[in-house]
Image (cartoon, rainbow, N blue to C red):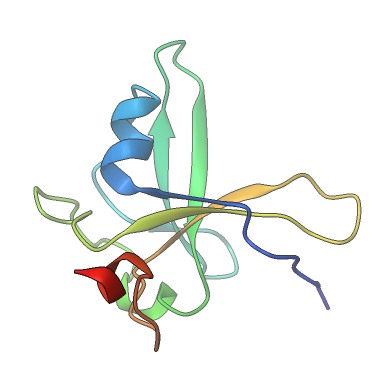
Length: 106
């Protein structure tokens, strides 16, 4: 069973995609185990699949079209592990039971 450490970095989808100058395949796909992902392509034409986190994966079935507004509620988080695996970016929709610290001062 995988053990995850704390999330060290979280970015809005806009910050992540535009900041890294990424293009994408505009359809959610799944791997052989059924985990949904989106393929992003950088300016060097290198593709990278980024998976949805466990808490929101069911909301994005294979074949879901990615249209304007799709990323409005999506955050990209960098997950690190206690073993020797490399950190991975994952997508989440932040619909869990929490609020931003910033919203406490609005």
